View 1 (cartoon, rainbow, N blue to C red):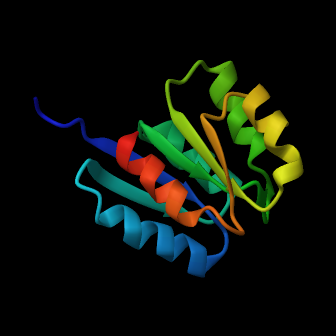
View 2 (view 1 turned 135 degrees about the horizontal axis):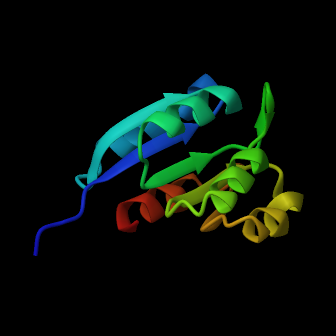
Length: 120
Protein backbone atom coordinates (compact mmCIF):
# COMPACT_ATOMS: atom_id res chain seq x y z
CA UNK A 1 0.00 0.00 0.00
CA UNK A 2 1.33 3.40 -0.96
CA UNK A 3 1.83 5.96 1.82
CA UNK A 4 -0.37 9.05 1.80
CA UNK A 5 1.38 12.33 1.20
CA UNK A 6 0.48 15.43 3.14
CA UNK A 7 0.84 19.17 2.80
CA UNK A 8 1.93 20.82 6.05
CA UNK A 9 1.37 24.40 7.17
CA UNK A 10 3.45 25.61 10.13
CA UNK A 11 2.15 28.75 11.85
CA UNK A 12 4.87 29.86 14.26
CA UNK A 13 6.19 33.37 14.90
CA UNK A 14 9.37 32.29 16.70
CA UNK A 15 11.95 31.83 13.90
CA UNK A 16 14.05 29.31 15.86
CA UNK A 17 11.09 27.06 16.71
CA UNK A 18 9.58 27.43 13.25
CA UNK A 19 12.86 26.43 11.60
CA UNK A 20 13.27 23.42 13.94
CA UNK A 21 9.78 22.15 13.08
CA UNK A 22 10.38 22.80 9.38
CA UNK A 23 13.72 20.95 9.39
CA UNK A 24 12.29 17.99 11.30
CA UNK A 25 9.24 17.79 9.01
CA UNK A 26 11.48 17.77 5.91
CA UNK A 27 12.82 14.42 7.12
CA UNK A 28 9.35 12.83 7.15
CA UNK A 29 8.69 10.82 4.00
CA UNK A 30 4.93 11.37 4.01
CA UNK A 31 5.24 15.17 3.91
CA UNK A 32 5.06 16.47 0.35
CA UNK A 33 5.04 20.26 0.77
CA UNK A 34 5.77 22.46 3.78
CA UNK A 35 4.85 26.10 4.20
CA UNK A 36 6.07 28.18 7.15
CA UNK A 37 4.28 31.37 8.12
CA UNK A 38 4.77 33.76 11.04
CA UNK A 39 1.35 35.41 11.37
CA UNK A 40 -2.32 34.55 11.61
CA UNK A 41 -3.37 36.65 8.62
CA UNK A 42 -0.65 35.19 6.42
CA UNK A 43 -1.69 31.68 7.48
CA UNK A 44 -5.34 32.35 6.62
CA UNK A 45 -4.37 33.82 3.25
CA UNK A 46 -2.15 30.84 2.39
CA UNK A 47 -4.73 28.35 3.65
CA UNK A 48 -7.40 29.88 1.41
CA UNK A 49 -5.18 29.24 -1.64
CA UNK A 50 -3.83 25.77 -0.79
CA UNK A 51 -5.29 22.69 0.85
CA UNK A 52 -3.29 21.57 3.86
CA UNK A 53 -3.77 18.18 5.44
CA UNK A 54 -1.91 19.09 8.63
CA UNK A 55 -1.38 22.42 10.43
CA UNK A 56 1.03 23.06 13.28
CA UNK A 57 -0.47 26.05 15.06
CA UNK A 58 0.98 28.40 17.64
CA UNK A 59 -1.66 30.36 19.56
CA UNK A 60 0.07 33.61 20.46
CA UNK A 61 0.85 35.31 17.18
CA UNK A 62 1.78 38.94 16.52
CA UNK A 63 -1.53 39.70 14.81
CA UNK A 64 -3.99 37.53 16.73
CA UNK A 65 -4.68 34.23 18.36
CA UNK A 66 -4.46 30.88 16.57
CA UNK A 67 -7.89 30.00 17.94
CA UNK A 68 -9.27 32.31 15.25
CA UNK A 69 -7.91 29.91 12.62
CA UNK A 70 -9.39 26.92 14.48
CA UNK A 71 -12.80 28.65 14.48
CA UNK A 72 -12.55 29.37 10.77
CA UNK A 73 -11.67 25.76 9.98
CA UNK A 74 -14.51 24.45 12.13
CA UNK A 75 -17.02 26.86 10.55
CA UNK A 76 -15.91 25.89 7.04
CA UNK A 77 -15.89 22.19 8.00
CA UNK A 78 -12.35 21.75 6.71
CA UNK A 79 -10.93 18.25 7.08
CA UNK A 80 -7.55 19.36 8.37
CA UNK A 81 -5.67 17.95 11.34
CA UNK A 82 -4.55 20.81 13.54
CA UNK A 83 -1.81 20.18 16.06
CA UNK A 84 -1.64 23.10 18.47
CA UNK A 85 1.92 23.73 19.69
CA UNK A 86 1.83 26.38 22.38
CA UNK A 87 2.91 27.42 25.85
CA UNK A 88 -0.69 28.54 26.48
CA UNK A 89 -1.72 25.25 28.06
CA UNK A 90 -4.63 26.96 29.80
CA UNK A 91 -6.28 27.16 26.35
CA UNK A 92 -6.09 23.39 25.73
CA UNK A 93 -9.84 22.79 26.29
CA UNK A 94 -10.76 25.76 24.10
CA UNK A 95 -8.58 24.39 21.29
CA UNK A 96 -10.32 21.01 21.44
CA UNK A 97 -13.71 22.76 21.52
CA UNK A 98 -12.84 24.35 18.17
CA UNK A 99 -11.59 21.17 16.55
CA UNK A 100 -7.89 20.82 17.36
CA UNK A 101 -6.74 17.26 16.75
CA UNK A 102 -4.02 17.39 19.42
CA UNK A 103 -2.36 19.85 21.78
CA UNK A 104 1.37 19.87 22.51
CA UNK A 105 3.11 21.89 25.20
CA UNK A 106 5.85 23.92 23.54
CA UNK A 107 7.97 23.71 26.70
CA UNK A 108 8.34 19.92 26.56
CA UNK A 109 6.53 18.15 23.69
CA UNK A 110 8.63 18.86 20.56
CA UNK A 111 9.52 15.21 19.95
CA UNK A 112 5.92 14.13 20.50
CA UNK A 113 4.77 16.74 17.96
CA UNK A 114 7.16 15.41 15.33
CA UNK A 115 6.02 11.84 16.01
CA UNK A 116 2.39 12.92 15.59
CA UNK A 117 3.21 14.49 12.22
CA UNK A 118 4.77 11.19 11.10
CA UNK A 119 1.56 9.26 11.73
CA UNK A 120 -0.88 11.96 10.63
